[in-house]
Image 1 (cartoon, rainbow, N blue to C red):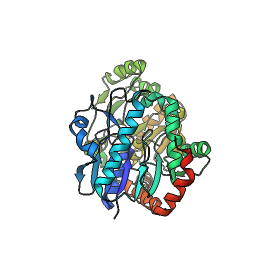
Image 2 (cartoon, rainbow, N blue to C red):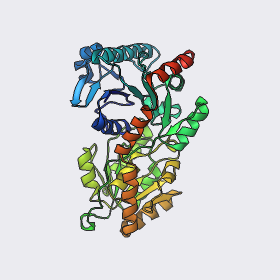
Image 3 (cartoon, helix red, strand yellow):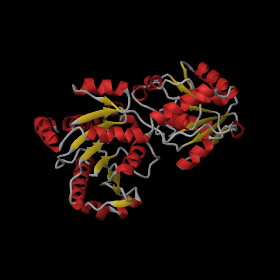
Image 4 (cartoon, rainbow, N blue to C red):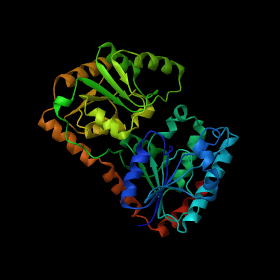
Length: 388
């Protein structure tokens, strides 16, 4: 099977998210070249260590079907001075990697907000929008005008465009003036619900702790003296958010474990009784598809979530949607008190099975197979003048 190049929106070593979980499933069926988001050499020792190999296009072997290419970036890489240099280095490293492989990839999937498609690839170019990059400037540290130009450039170069939620697909379709498909996030294979004797009246929160969370909801849950298990690193950038997280995580009824291995996450979820997705109602979040929601269902945990469009997609009797802070707390208390019945357990299994990463990987390969290299070349010529 021919190679797929996947340009990620993060680094392989980051907390496993959409990109890594999707690529791991893609690599089960065939070879994949993972490309890191550009990272400054002064900050990351591994980027310095592999810099010369990266500049020669020599990737690191992760598994028999999976290779990783790091993209070194200079100091001030996100500034007006550093961005053109970062772009040139990234392009050079990817082109060298294609030459090193001896055969161009059959498809390039680009999930980065800033990295451009390699110009020499004649195969399918699929732009996968994992987040609303137009609303992401405060979260990822690039100016909004630069993110907009990068998005316009990649939209013009792509044969196919997909987004993780209907809300984001509609917004991007309107922005680009072209169809955008929906390819939601997935989850690990579901497990049957652990025996209730292993579960305790604990509320679980998984994922990064930052400005995306509704801290009012979290503080209300803690005020209600519910036991809360928190699994995930802090990635906030706002001082006020830092202060509130400090206070929340220091509560006696909050057990914060920090970053936890995926296998350990599943084991700990088997000891909890309800999972929560307390996202703030922001433009960025309304276009998202939270990974944690499906992960809870895959682990056999009922879910209480704030009212986001993506939550409504998951028709599951074990999903409870809260319209406000007080309702959120009440729904969590109810889920802790009442064990899920057989119908709810079956629903959780069904939804998780239908939304597995294996299914998403198959969807991606099907989409990539719809375009031949000749189609890609023709569309590149037609849309080339839009590139900037």
